[in-house]
Image (cartoon, rainbow, N blue to C red; front, side, top):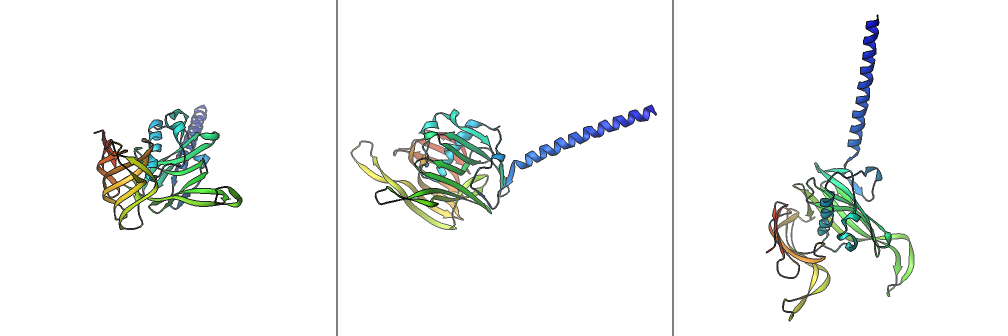
Length: 303
């Protein structure tokens, strides 16, 4: 009898231990599941605080990718990064929910820091798993105006829009003439992107098209001897679209944060991915050459 009682006690203890273990496993599974989000047909227009957690990745590499990601806009960012560009310790990086999109998983990170007038900058950076390509999919800026970046994940395309929010009407002299009851949203910048070989590439609605356009303000460019000069647009695209993405030889001019100015680039695309040598020329002569293999940077040298 005493033996049966002992066996019963052992069984009860075992069952209690198993139930606790199962509860713990289910709890962990629930947490892991909550950190992944299928974003097909999803509009990212705000930050969900329940999806923020501490970072376990390389913070410095993420910050570098954050600055690099603005290259995709061509245009100069709407916020001035001078205060934090060389003070990365002021930048807070948090892990955000993983996005499952077009059969691939991408990491996202919440980037935040205080800037002029103690305003808080916040954005969401979408990054591939090896952290060598990214896209700003959400951004809220209060700096000489209010700007909001949103992203719509639709089928296999990311529609990335940057809006300027207007609170007032202005007269011809630029003075405030009226406060708006409903804020106006003016589309400031819009680009479409496609996931290609784990990279985020520009996508065009036209399957085949030749592009040769310049835009933005003009700046004066002086020759090396200073005897001649010319005015050029800040931004440029010249190349060919095939199957909705860039292919072949391209000449571009984009704003690059590392130079803090617009820079000439030229090189080759294959199915939207940089391939071979890409030259960077901030003031005429080539300053830097990057060598790519189907989107992956494999070498950098300075001629």
